[in-house]
Length: 325
Image (cartoon, rainbow, N blue to C red; front, top):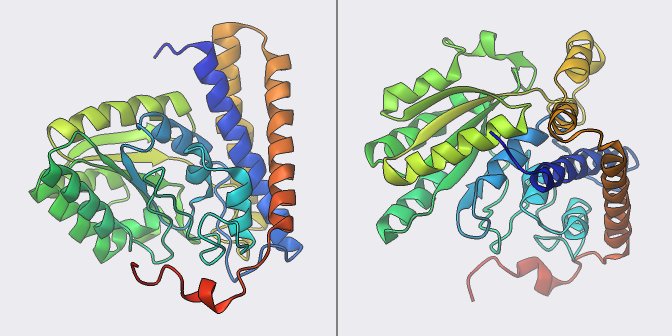
Protein backbone atom coordinates (compact mmCIF):
# COMPACT_ATOMS: atom_id res chain seq x y z
CA UNK A 1 0.00 0.00 0.00
CA UNK A 2 1.42 3.40 -1.02
CA UNK A 3 1.36 5.90 1.83
CA UNK A 4 2.63 9.45 1.88
CA UNK A 5 5.80 10.37 3.71
CA UNK A 6 4.05 12.47 6.35
CA UNK A 7 1.85 9.53 7.38
CA UNK A 8 4.80 7.16 7.65
CA UNK A 9 6.81 9.66 9.70
CA UNK A 10 3.85 10.15 12.02
CA UNK A 11 3.53 6.40 12.52
CA UNK A 12 7.24 6.29 13.27
CA UNK A 13 6.75 9.06 15.83
CA UNK A 14 3.95 7.16 17.55
CA UNK A 15 5.87 3.90 17.63
CA UNK A 16 8.98 5.52 19.07
CA UNK A 17 6.90 7.34 21.68
CA UNK A 18 5.30 4.06 22.76
CA UNK A 19 8.67 2.26 22.91
CA UNK A 20 10.40 4.99 24.90
CA UNK A 21 7.40 5.43 27.22
CA UNK A 22 7.32 1.71 27.96
CA UNK A 23 11.05 1.52 28.58
CA UNK A 24 10.83 4.52 30.91
CA UNK A 25 8.03 2.77 32.82
CA UNK A 26 10.30 -0.24 33.37
CA UNK A 27 12.94 2.00 34.94
CA UNK A 28 10.38 3.87 37.02
CA UNK A 29 9.01 0.59 38.33
CA UNK A 30 12.52 -0.53 39.26
CA UNK A 31 12.89 2.76 41.17
CA UNK A 32 9.50 2.15 42.88
CA UNK A 33 8.07 5.35 41.40
CA UNK A 34 5.51 3.21 39.59
CA UNK A 35 4.18 0.79 42.16
CA UNK A 36 1.90 -2.23 42.31
CA UNK A 37 2.25 -5.95 41.88
CA UNK A 38 2.28 -5.93 38.07
CA UNK A 39 3.34 -3.81 35.15
CA UNK A 40 2.64 -5.23 31.70
CA UNK A 41 4.76 -3.71 28.94
CA UNK A 42 4.27 -4.06 25.20
CA UNK A 43 7.62 -3.16 23.67
CA UNK A 44 7.60 -5.04 20.37
CA UNK A 45 3.83 -4.66 19.81
CA UNK A 46 3.96 -1.05 18.62
CA UNK A 47 3.03 -1.74 15.00
CA UNK A 48 -0.18 -3.51 16.02
CA UNK A 49 -1.43 -0.56 18.04
CA UNK A 50 -0.41 2.19 15.64
CA UNK A 51 -1.68 0.33 12.56
CA UNK A 52 -5.02 -0.55 14.15
CA UNK A 53 -5.67 2.92 15.55
CA UNK A 54 -4.74 4.51 12.21
CA UNK A 55 -7.64 2.57 10.65
CA UNK A 56 -10.11 4.03 13.18
CA UNK A 57 -11.91 7.33 13.31
CA UNK A 58 -10.64 8.24 16.77
CA UNK A 59 -13.50 9.43 18.94
CA UNK A 60 -16.09 7.86 16.63
CA UNK A 61 -15.16 4.19 16.45
CA UNK A 62 -14.43 2.20 19.59
CA UNK A 63 -11.52 0.25 21.08
CA UNK A 64 -11.07 -1.89 24.18
CA UNK A 65 -8.24 -4.07 25.42
CA UNK A 66 -6.78 -6.04 28.31
CA UNK A 67 -4.04 -4.88 30.67
CA UNK A 68 -1.30 -4.25 28.07
CA UNK A 69 -2.91 -0.91 27.31
CA UNK A 70 -0.33 1.90 27.43
CA UNK A 71 0.55 1.74 23.74
CA UNK A 72 -3.06 2.01 22.64
CA UNK A 73 -3.60 5.04 24.87
CA UNK A 74 -0.64 6.83 23.31
CA UNK A 75 -1.54 5.83 19.74
CA UNK A 76 -5.01 7.30 20.30
CA UNK A 77 -3.38 10.62 21.14
CA UNK A 78 -4.01 10.61 24.88
CA UNK A 79 -1.71 13.04 26.68
CA UNK A 80 1.53 11.31 27.70
CA UNK A 81 1.77 13.33 30.91
CA UNK A 82 -1.68 12.28 32.07
CA UNK A 83 -1.01 8.67 31.10
CA UNK A 84 2.24 8.72 33.09
CA UNK A 85 0.46 10.35 36.03
CA UNK A 86 -1.98 7.43 36.01
CA UNK A 87 0.92 5.00 35.96
CA UNK A 88 2.16 6.65 39.15
CA UNK A 89 -1.30 6.75 40.72
CA UNK A 90 -1.55 10.54 40.69
CA UNK A 91 -4.62 12.77 40.74
CA UNK A 92 -3.95 14.18 37.25
CA UNK A 93 -3.91 10.71 35.71
CA UNK A 94 -6.42 9.77 33.03
CA UNK A 95 -8.37 7.73 35.60
CA UNK A 96 -7.74 10.08 38.50
CA UNK A 97 -4.88 7.97 39.77
CA UNK A 98 -7.24 5.22 40.91
CA UNK A 99 -6.80 2.80 38.03
CA UNK A 100 -3.09 2.68 37.39
CA UNK A 101 -1.31 0.79 34.65
CA UNK A 102 -4.02 -1.75 33.85
CA UNK A 103 -6.98 0.65 33.79
CA UNK A 104 -6.31 3.46 31.34
CA UNK A 105 -9.45 4.82 29.70
CA UNK A 106 -10.78 7.87 27.86
CA UNK A 107 -14.40 8.59 26.99
CA UNK A 108 -13.18 11.33 24.64
CA UNK A 109 -11.33 8.74 22.55
CA UNK A 110 -13.97 5.98 22.87
CA UNK A 111 -11.28 3.94 24.64
CA UNK A 112 -13.03 1.82 27.21
CA UNK A 113 -9.92 0.84 28.99
CA UNK A 114 -7.62 -1.90 29.93
CA UNK A 115 -9.05 -4.76 31.98
CA UNK A 116 -7.09 -6.80 34.49
CA UNK A 117 -9.22 -9.95 34.25
CA UNK A 118 -8.04 -12.16 31.39
CA UNK A 119 -10.72 -12.05 28.69
CA UNK A 120 -13.06 -10.03 30.89
CA UNK A 121 -13.29 -7.21 28.37
CA UNK A 122 -14.43 -9.42 25.48
CA UNK A 123 -18.15 -9.56 26.38
CA UNK A 124 -17.99 -5.77 26.78
CA UNK A 125 -16.66 -5.51 23.22
CA UNK A 126 -19.61 -7.58 22.04
CA UNK A 127 -21.96 -5.27 23.96
CA UNK A 128 -20.39 -2.17 22.44
CA UNK A 129 -20.84 -3.62 18.96
CA UNK A 130 -24.44 -4.57 19.76
CA UNK A 131 -25.07 -0.92 20.72
CA UNK A 132 -23.58 0.22 17.39
CA UNK A 133 -25.85 -2.13 15.45
CA UNK A 134 -28.90 -1.20 17.55
CA UNK A 135 -28.32 2.48 16.86
CA UNK A 136 -27.86 1.85 13.17
CA UNK A 137 -24.62 3.80 12.87
CA UNK A 138 -21.50 2.94 10.86
CA UNK A 139 -19.21 2.54 13.86
CA UNK A 140 -17.14 -0.54 14.68
CA UNK A 141 -15.35 -1.92 17.74
CA UNK A 142 -11.73 -3.08 17.89
CA UNK A 143 -10.91 -5.53 20.65
CA UNK A 144 -7.38 -6.70 21.41
CA UNK A 145 -7.04 -10.28 22.66
CA UNK A 146 -3.92 -11.90 24.09
CA UNK A 147 -3.23 -15.35 22.68
CA UNK A 148 -3.59 -16.78 26.19
CA UNK A 149 -7.13 -15.42 26.47
CA UNK A 150 -8.33 -17.43 23.47
CA UNK A 151 -8.74 -20.48 25.72
CA UNK A 152 -10.93 -18.54 28.16
CA UNK A 153 -14.69 -19.00 28.24
CA UNK A 154 -15.22 -15.27 27.76
CA UNK A 155 -13.56 -15.56 24.34
CA UNK A 156 -15.93 -18.22 23.07
CA UNK A 157 -19.08 -16.63 24.49
CA UNK A 158 -18.24 -13.16 23.19
CA UNK A 159 -17.24 -14.30 19.70
CA UNK A 160 -20.22 -16.62 19.41
CA UNK A 161 -22.70 -13.83 20.17
CA UNK A 162 -20.79 -11.52 17.82
CA UNK A 163 -21.13 -14.10 15.05
CA UNK A 164 -24.77 -14.89 15.75
CA UNK A 165 -25.84 -11.23 15.57
CA UNK A 166 -23.36 -10.23 12.83
CA UNK A 167 -21.98 -7.42 14.98
CA UNK A 168 -19.37 -4.86 13.82
CA UNK A 169 -16.51 -6.34 15.85
CA UNK A 170 -12.88 -6.51 14.78
CA UNK A 171 -11.25 -9.11 16.99
CA UNK A 172 -7.43 -8.84 16.96
CA UNK A 173 -5.44 -11.62 18.60
CA UNK A 174 -1.98 -10.38 19.65
CA UNK A 175 -0.15 -13.66 19.26
CA UNK A 176 3.25 -13.07 20.86
CA UNK A 177 3.86 -16.78 21.25
CA UNK A 178 3.29 -17.07 24.97
CA UNK A 179 0.41 -16.82 27.42
CA UNK A 180 2.44 -15.75 30.43
CA UNK A 181 5.28 -18.29 30.06
CA UNK A 182 3.42 -21.09 28.27
CA UNK A 183 3.87 -21.37 24.51
CA UNK A 184 0.80 -21.34 22.29
CA UNK A 185 1.71 -24.80 20.99
CA UNK A 186 1.48 -26.22 24.51
CA UNK A 187 -1.72 -24.38 25.45
CA UNK A 188 -3.92 -24.68 22.36
CA UNK A 189 -5.17 -27.85 20.71
CA UNK A 190 -5.07 -25.90 17.45
CA UNK A 191 -2.33 -23.25 17.73
CA UNK A 192 -3.46 -21.59 14.47
CA UNK A 193 -5.70 -19.27 16.42
CA UNK A 194 -7.43 -17.40 13.59
CA UNK A 195 -9.08 -20.63 12.47
CA UNK A 196 -11.38 -20.38 15.49
CA UNK A 197 -13.31 -17.69 13.62
CA UNK A 198 -14.97 -20.30 11.43
CA UNK A 199 -16.67 -21.98 14.37
CA UNK A 200 -18.66 -18.80 15.04
CA UNK A 201 -19.44 -17.67 11.50
CA UNK A 202 -16.86 -14.89 11.74
CA UNK A 203 -14.80 -13.74 8.76
CA UNK A 204 -11.31 -15.23 9.05
CA UNK A 205 -8.63 -12.73 7.98
CA UNK A 206 -5.82 -15.14 8.79
CA UNK A 207 -2.42 -14.19 10.10
CA UNK A 208 -1.01 -10.70 9.64
CA UNK A 209 2.57 -9.60 10.29
CA UNK A 210 2.12 -7.72 13.54
CA UNK A 211 5.61 -6.24 13.20
CA UNK A 212 4.65 -4.39 10.02
CA UNK A 213 2.54 -1.30 10.73
CA UNK A 214 1.50 -1.00 7.08
CA UNK A 215 0.26 -4.60 6.98
CA UNK A 216 -1.70 -3.99 10.18
CA UNK A 217 -3.23 -0.77 8.85
CA UNK A 218 -4.22 -2.48 5.60
CA UNK A 219 -5.80 -5.48 7.37
CA UNK A 220 -7.74 -3.44 9.92
CA UNK A 221 -8.91 -0.95 7.27
CA UNK A 222 -10.35 -3.79 5.19
CA UNK A 223 -11.78 -5.41 8.32
CA UNK A 224 -13.54 -2.18 9.30
CA UNK A 225 -15.44 -2.04 6.01
CA UNK A 226 -16.41 -5.69 6.30
CA UNK A 227 -17.44 -5.43 9.95
CA UNK A 228 -19.79 -2.52 9.34
CA UNK A 229 -21.34 -4.01 6.21
CA UNK A 230 -21.36 -7.74 6.95
CA UNK A 231 -20.32 -8.54 10.53
CA UNK A 232 -17.32 -9.55 12.64
CA UNK A 233 -13.76 -10.22 11.54
CA UNK A 234 -10.94 -12.08 13.33
CA UNK A 235 -7.29 -11.16 12.74
CA UNK A 236 -4.31 -13.01 14.21
CA UNK A 237 -1.42 -10.54 14.47
CA UNK A 238 1.93 -12.30 14.86
CA UNK A 239 4.21 -10.38 17.20
CA UNK A 240 6.67 -10.70 20.08
CA UNK A 241 7.00 -8.85 23.36
CA UNK A 242 10.43 -7.73 24.47
CA UNK A 243 9.66 -7.94 28.18
CA UNK A 244 8.16 -10.75 30.20
CA UNK A 245 4.46 -11.14 30.83
CA UNK A 246 4.90 -8.74 33.75
CA UNK A 247 7.88 -7.04 35.31
CA UNK A 248 8.54 -9.99 37.62
CA UNK A 249 8.76 -12.42 34.68
CA UNK A 250 12.43 -13.14 33.93
CA UNK A 251 12.01 -15.76 31.19
CA UNK A 252 13.73 -13.54 28.62
CA UNK A 253 16.78 -13.36 30.84
CA UNK A 254 17.09 -17.13 30.78
CA UNK A 255 15.39 -19.69 28.55
CA UNK A 256 14.11 -17.32 25.85
CA UNK A 257 17.08 -14.96 25.63
CA UNK A 258 18.34 -16.17 22.24
CA UNK A 259 14.84 -16.11 20.74
CA UNK A 260 14.28 -12.57 21.99
CA UNK A 261 17.55 -11.32 20.53
CA UNK A 262 16.69 -12.85 17.16
CA UNK A 263 13.34 -11.03 17.06
CA UNK A 264 14.99 -7.76 18.02
CA UNK A 265 17.68 -8.16 15.35
CA UNK A 266 15.45 -9.23 12.46
CA UNK A 267 11.83 -8.29 13.14
CA UNK A 268 11.78 -5.11 15.20
CA UNK A 269 8.70 -3.11 14.12
CA UNK A 270 10.41 0.27 14.35
CA UNK A 271 13.36 -0.88 12.25
CA UNK A 272 11.02 -2.44 9.67
CA UNK A 273 9.24 0.89 9.28
CA UNK A 274 12.55 2.78 9.07
CA UNK A 275 13.67 0.55 6.24
CA UNK A 276 10.39 1.05 4.40
CA UNK A 277 10.61 4.84 4.72
CA UNK A 278 14.20 4.81 3.42
CA UNK A 279 13.20 2.60 0.47
CA UNK A 280 10.29 4.84 -0.50
CA UNK A 281 11.64 8.28 0.38
CA UNK A 282 15.42 8.06 0.47
CA UNK A 283 17.70 9.01 3.31
CA UNK A 284 15.56 10.56 6.04
CA UNK A 285 17.85 9.65 8.92
CA UNK A 286 18.13 13.26 10.10
CA UNK A 287 14.33 13.57 10.25
CA UNK A 288 14.02 10.26 12.08
CA UNK A 289 16.68 11.27 14.59
CA UNK A 290 14.88 14.55 15.26
CA UNK A 291 11.59 12.71 15.76
CA UNK A 292 13.24 10.26 18.14
CA UNK A 293 14.77 13.02 20.23
CA UNK A 294 11.43 14.84 20.38
CA UNK A 295 9.75 11.71 21.75
CA UNK A 296 12.44 11.27 24.39
CA UNK A 297 11.72 14.83 25.49
CA UNK A 298 7.97 14.13 25.65
CA UNK A 299 8.59 11.08 27.84
CA UNK A 300 10.87 13.06 30.15
CA UNK A 301 8.29 15.84 30.40
CA UNK A 302 5.58 13.27 31.14
CA UNK A 303 7.64 12.01 34.08
CA UNK A 304 8.11 15.54 35.38
CA UNK A 305 4.37 16.17 35.07
CA UNK A 306 3.56 12.97 36.93
CA UNK A 307 6.10 13.70 39.67
CA UNK A 308 4.53 17.12 40.24
CA UNK A 309 0.97 15.79 40.35
CA UNK A 310 -0.55 15.24 43.83
CA UNK A 311 -1.89 11.95 45.11
CA UNK A 312 -5.69 11.42 45.22
CA UNK A 313 -5.92 11.47 49.00
CA UNK A 314 -9.34 12.71 50.02
CA UNK A 315 -12.45 10.72 50.87
CA UNK A 316 -14.35 12.66 48.23
CA UNK A 317 -11.93 11.48 45.56
CA UNK A 318 -11.97 7.95 46.89
CA UNK A 319 -15.71 7.56 46.41
CA UNK A 320 -16.04 9.65 43.23
CA UNK A 321 -17.17 7.85 40.05
CA UNK A 322 -18.44 4.80 41.92
CA UNK A 323 -22.04 5.72 41.04
CA UNK A 324 -23.47 7.95 38.34
CA UNK A 325 -24.46 11.32 39.79
